[in-house]
Picture 1 (cartoon, rainbow, N blue to C red):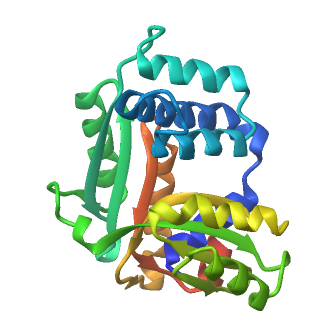
Picture 2: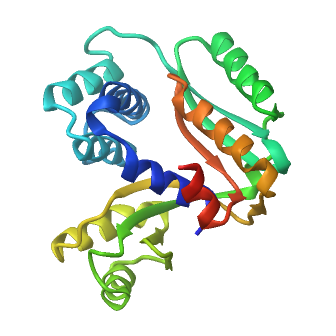
Length: 248
């Protein structure tokens, strides 16, 4: 399991949902708006919208909010005009970083993202500089307390998953993006709870971070993830579990 996956899972476990819900709702709403704009407002015929709506329900977003976001995307009601931009760069220790942004002001967004990199020992790169290091995959995280490895493997693989990666605290089920919903549905049918289920960018290879750079890398990740326009951040760092837990 990549270092960033471990860090993301730590943040999931430690997050106080009530404290971050407002910002989280905003990010999810933007994803719904973009999905509806690109593929229409029917989740049954728009796979991206179906995933976005499911994510909204996972974080207990009210149905009225979901409906309004879809209507903004289809143009039925007015709202801010967002565009999706992917930024790429390098963090301390040569860590590759990909950022998915949805913003109503491209110039502001790129300036602020560039400043975050500069303040935290990294640099914003050209388009394509690190994208080749990542592959789009479906990822479902299941806590190890929920079921044994044999059960998870059986249910996930039978439903179409490609791999199950095991760490001390969780299973990471990896699928083709198009198979994510089927595997998720199979877990639900077998009453196997999961912490998250989403399409992600998985690094093909990881970079081991030196102990002296760990805090720098994690500060960069936190600063990027906390930016209002940033939807997702992906990186290829690998940090030993004990250093991650200490930092968390």
